[in-house]
Length: 333
Image 1: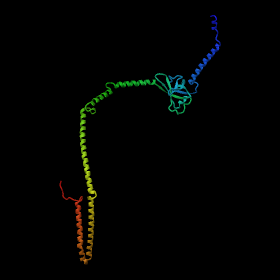
Image 2 (image 1 turned 180 degrees about the vertical axis):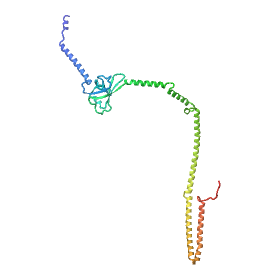
Image 3 (image 1 turned 90 degrees about the vertical axis):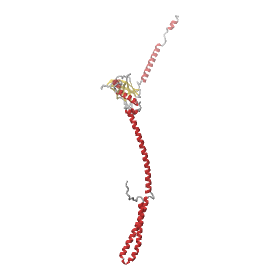
Image 4 (image 1 turned 45 degrees about the vertical axis):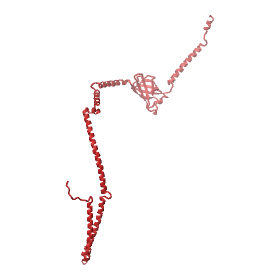
């Protein structure tokens, strides 16, 4: 036992060197972890500065993120009060994320009922010019708590309106009573007609008037059919008269032929009279040839009388035909 105790108390070799190596390794590992964390957070990445001017920076702190479509594209590095009385918020934006920010981008500061404020960026057209380094842009506020008083006032007015609408003497109740009365009338004998006119008696009058109107319409329909038949008969009669009077072989054609014959006979009569005038002139001029002239007069007279008789017969025949026939007898109604 006495020999074993000194062996356990022997010092470990190179304890200081080993401790030094352990400390160096620990500090190296800590430095590597710290460097990785800084690299992961973009500490060594090249950035550009963006200055946001807000009326109130309440809820915004150093280290807050500037988000675009829900992803962080920048970090707040400094907040100070500008000479104009506005809050000046300096944001570092990595060069790799600056492509999402354009000259036409809009920046908002939103505060909800729960949680801190949020800086958000909106870009409508990614084809615009890139946002320059050191650009100063205004911030639009979207504070939900600022709208609470107006919202409470609107809810209060809504509740008051609902109370007035549900009162016994309100217009809504009177309207519902009118609807109930209307539905009760619609359930009567004549249904919707009773509801529209107000009573069954008025509805019955309307139905009776409709029945009488239907009877009148039926009579008018029958009269129209009779007039239609009469019109067809009249059309047939007119067609027949047109065919007999104006058609081929009708009265007009026969009258034209008769007129032509009369003209021919009158021409012959004129020729005969002309010959008679010539003979009379010869008789007067030549007194010595009286016997020869008087010998030709009976033949010429006979020829003239024949022409006149033919003309008289033709005129009588024309008078017997329509429309030249004349009824000289006066008939009383």
